[in-house]
Amino acid sequence: MDIDEYDVVVAGAGTAGCYAAATIANEGLDVVIVERKDEQEAGHIACGDALKGADAFPEAIPKDRLEPAFTNTGVDHGRFEIPQEDTILEIPVPGELAVIDRWEYGRQVIAGAEDAGVDFHYDTVISDVIQDGTGRVTGLRAKRKGDPVTYASDLVIDGLGSLSLLQDKADFEDATFDTNVRYSQFCSAYREIVEVPEPVEWDDALVFKATDRAAGYLWYFPRTSTEINAGLGFQMNEEPMQLVEALKRDLRNRPEFEGAEVKDKLGAALPTRRPYDSAVAPGYMAVGDAAGHVNPTTGGGIAGAAYAGKYAGEQAVKAISDGDVTEENLWRYNTRVMDHFGGRYAGLDVYNVLSTAVDVDDLMGLLASLPGEKLAEALYEGSTSMSFGLKVKAAIKSFGYWGTIRNFYQTKSLADELLAHYEEYPTSPAAMANWTSERDAIMDRVYETTGADAKY
Image (cartoon, rainbow, N blue to C red; front, side):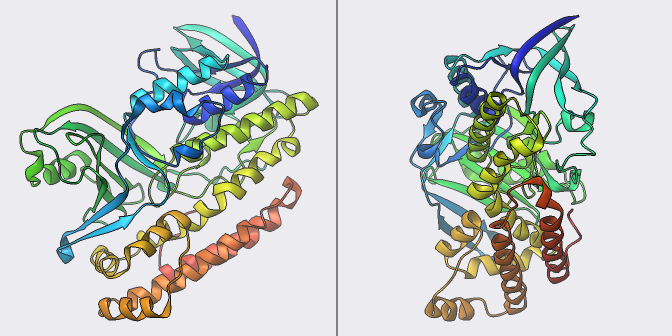
């Protein structure tokens, strides 16, 4: 059996894996990305294609390398269609926003990692994780084009996406690595790339529309004025929905899609949960979707994945330089993620929990009555505030939903409390048990207030 030796082995050629590997290779270490797809198909994944904040992406892969994938840089707001209220709600989206060709983006991210000196092994299917007698991860077993191969390394970085196989194979019983993971914390999504005969009037907007269940929504994101990413997602703790039929039914009722041609179809799972409490174990780090690094209210995960890759790559370089890949020495990766976006995503997860318990008509009616800019803050920042005047106007418009508003207000207070708790994220694994116990007590109050089933 062949044994390939590297300083770092990265599983998966997605955003997080490529940014991690490029960061490591830029420092002169030997790193390989192991990818199950062939070279042509690599980078082709189901995605909404909306990209937020690319102007501030890590520099390991230069932004100009990504720009060929930017197909629509004119989008600047969200458009929420609320047929129950006969209303369209326009919501500003803060920061740079674009719609991309996700397959082309995937190719460009891979090319950027290659430019940095990363090796790529395509057609390689991982079968197992190798651990030594202390539990430290020391490599992977796989089949490359059908032939067995072993990868030996100082560190393994898991970028295999939602419900990663590596986490099923590894034994993390003695580590802090988050194993409180189950299917109900994930969303199932399906999307089609649709070519329409005439330009749509909303080519400057990301269009959202609720399904008949609060924990699901349709989206229409314009790659161009005539090429639309049309998709649907729903929380997996809901009863199974007929995804394709629900989407097709809405497409049939939209006059702008008459005579449209479907160019591509793809489905996937993505995390709609808080980031993993800890994404490190001895010799191992998880990044991107494999560690829950996704905004749970929007499903946006590209930016979080890029920065998780950067932070993991930088910590990998330090750990290897120190000759110490223990959990303790990898821990700063966790703290940087939580400080940058992890705490905010955990706060936003509270609203995701609420959405599983609220009546969809009440939710849509309430959304239609609230100021758009404040909804934008809640969706992207995890918290918002209103002046007295805005509160009065909202109270008048939302008459009939005051019970729901009271529930939302109580939930918001708990989300703010949770955000504050994440600001005290522990600086070492030794303090983790006390921190999680206090966090779980806050979440118990979230479940009690919302009436939602426990998510974790």
